[in-house]
Image (tube, rainbow, N blue to C red; front, side):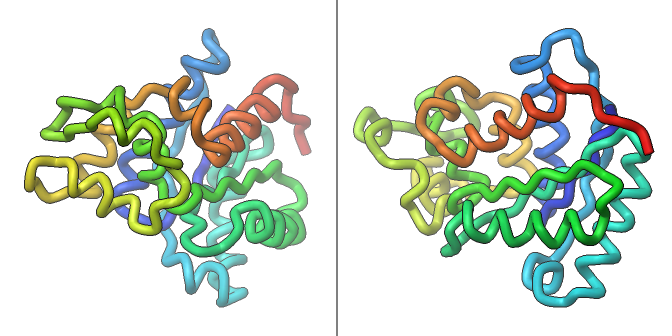
Length: 200
């Protein structure tokens, strides 16, 4: 299956293919999806300008082909992931009804999944996680990137370097256990990879 994702940051452009290939190994071993380079969008323009929305969805539909899958993966920020995600999904399905689409909103940021699995990142790239961190609800910190940065021994957190590196390392089971939005990603993966996608 060819997978085309729509993301909002340069860090995600590098990290999401790593995320999806690892997810394939974890959830559906033996399957080898064709993970395309993500399409980067500016979230506000993507969601608030209909022509931008349609243009990017049409491009994703063209890139993934008849048997592919489109994954819209954005940060929820201050929005409710379930409510906003459903609104985006309805627009997606109206725009490209001939393609399967999933919408996953990381609550609140992609880095919340790192917080959920902070113990597995301890000692990596200067990151230091103390035991109390394991009690933090990973989906509460508004500035997840800042939360990570504060624990990197005064190193700057680089989205294009650290985000892919942490994506390659964080423990998926820990993230699954502690993050509802990561479980949503896994559920969407399972749904689209357990049953074959029908051709046009």
